[in-house]
Image (cartoon, rainbow, N blue to C red; front, side):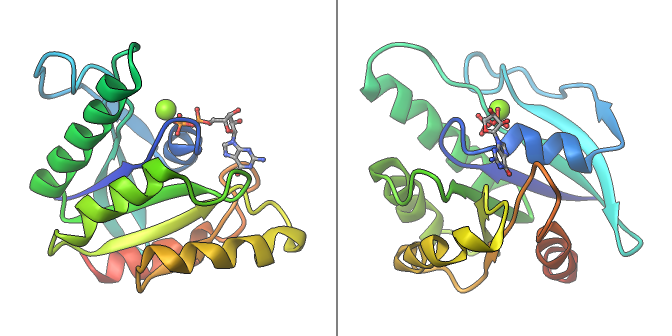
Length: 162
Ligand code: GDP
Ligand code: MG
């Protein structure tokens, strides 16, 4: 079964998106200390195509350096194991340095990357989402993990790439 990983810095809404999509949780199948501690696996399907979804989130509280290094590890793991990657960012905060860091790592990967601009809860936030084009990804989607708008467009394209 294809694997889809959701990556991005903390608080952008990865877990909210994950919980909206999955039907049932799977056991955490790996236990690399630290990095995978907070990874959750779930099964989902869209347009009749099943896939495994990984919610990445593990990080070590401490200095910003450690914090960033943990996110980098999550991204590298995702690049290794996933067939497609959802890179989530937050329209409320705009593009951050950490987003740019993650983008840099992801651009080196050959895997299809879907940039999910989360928290676009209404039309008034569409304009603000435009600045994320600066991250340089071809597939960019405005969505709201809280009310579900826009998630269908992302999933339509995602499952085509699996
Ligand atoms: P994670 O750290 O990336 O897993 O982020 P969470 O899923 O834990 O969400 C972080 C915060 O953002 C929570 O307070 C969520 O309720 C909020 N949030 C998530 N998705 C949305 C959204 O689509 N719109 C808004 N307004 N808030 C959201
Ligand atoms: Mg989370």
